[in-house]
Image 1: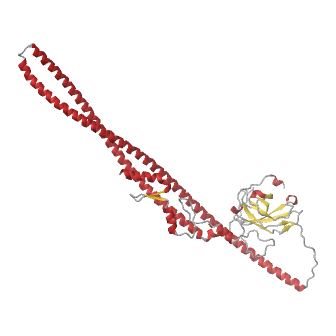
Image 2: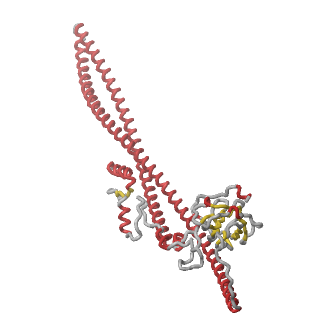
Image 3: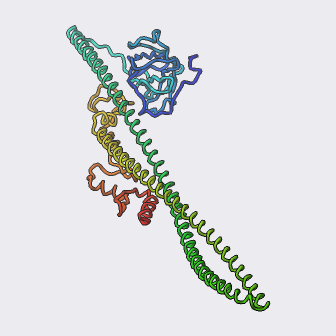
Length: 454
């Protein structure tokens, strides 16, 4: 037992995940006498590639993982690893390391990854209890017994051939099941990828809606400021008109004063001083007029600038509305594609539930050896691998499941009831007949707010 100094590679994977048909144990006795060495014979099929860390262990019946071994021996490598034919091997277990109780045990072949690739029928370690009895038989009885032995050997050979055929069929079914599982994983990966893209589009739509609302608020503020400036412009125009009228009056008065000046030039110096005061007043009015004209020009320039800004904001708002319509169209396409994929996934689940491969996988897990009927009595200590059909039927999963809330429905539920349940999760827009999920109520509220602005 020098080879057992190192711990063998084990795994925490449960019993249902193993494949027991890749290694076949031969000539396993019903019981072994305690205190003696035992020889374990097994056959490596073409479906397994032996490796250096493979080992054969003795497990108590009822084990769950490969960590529950009682003792083990390293499996020797075949002399020709490149051969594709079956290889017969054997290992000797010394009596010192064998169990001392009379519980049921079995041989298991475990690869270097800790996965079980083969298991034997159960056996016990106990002494032979039958007493030696002298039996006297006639020659006819001996010939009859020999004929029965030949018939039994022939029947045993046929049963072995049937067993090999069933094992080959089991391997083919396992390969088909594995391909179906891989296809299912690929479909699940595609669904996850599409769901991730849908979430990203929704986030982009929410950001776009926020930017659009802020732009609308800015536009409203600009409109208010534009209205204020328009009112100020009207007031300034009224003031300008009053100034123009006063200016005309002053010009008329100035003309009148000029004419009067001609007449008053002949008058005394007092009238000349009065005329000089009138000229100074005229100059003040002219300067005030120039100031009002410059202020009016500044106001008009500011109004032109505001009009340009309003046009730019209006153009930007139209571009964002166009971008919003494009994003909304892409979202609709994504929702339709999502719905088609969900329908396709439901059809695949229903077809998988109706296929015989799926029923075989649920009824007889790959980790178990094909069992005989309960009425057969070929095993002395019973068949530990038999499983009733009722237990397998209880493990059959339900196909109808709501993809929005995760609620599972019975198989006899009608399609109309299932559709009514799905509609209860949806929010319909009364303006454009667009549909939103209940979880996206904020998007629905933003959508309704956009309709209220139109």
